[in-house]
Image 1: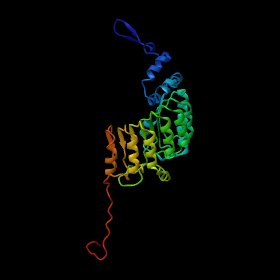
Image 2: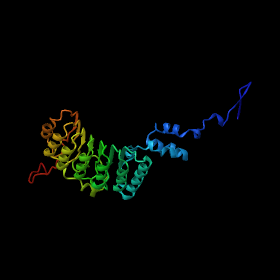
Image 3: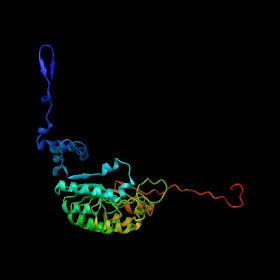
Image 4: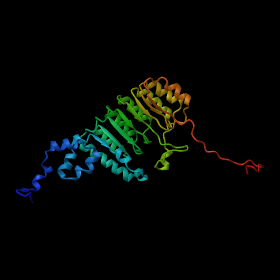
Length: 301
């Protein structure tokens, strides 16, 4: 194409546009490393086979974070189906393979024993593991995590009821760098509870051994700095075990722990000198009052 500016002609053609296909792999890796994982999924991976293969490089697959993706959609009961779990499992296994064993962080929901065991056997440098709402993850795969991933420093097993206190014991013994533990349960009773989407029969399987878990945490996880225990069944005895064993705690979440009193929390947390934030249960929940007229009282009938 020619543009006449009066006295001279200026040629404009495709040659003026940069040819991105000529970029070296090193340049592409440098550019792609500045993008989030999700940005790479919806951008470079769709441009060309070369760019897609570059996105598969192990150096770009050390972190697998689906949590932000889950948070961007309204919760669905379909997430609790075997078909959805199969998709999540397949995704996790593929990222494990791309990382060539270099995964250090996994944040995921609704995976199963199969993919978690696969990751545990191939990713010894794992430091962060979030497996929220994974009903088909049990102590079997958590044992592999405990034995094969000694560098684990952050663990979120919230709403994963197949994981018992036995896993906490194994993890505490083998993962001595553990600093953050989230063992939250789903809310079950009470007014003004948040809306949750979960099969009703699953709610009934919630762990009932809060004091046993608390005792194990206090004994085997002395380096904890952050502990979330929302809606646990622990009592004052369990809280005492945690506070005596985890003296370095800086953050403690006891929301929904209705077996604790204000006095219990004040008494046992007073020994935690580094504690900067504590989330307490609601000690004054609203009560629904049923007004029934007394027989024979016309003013109330």
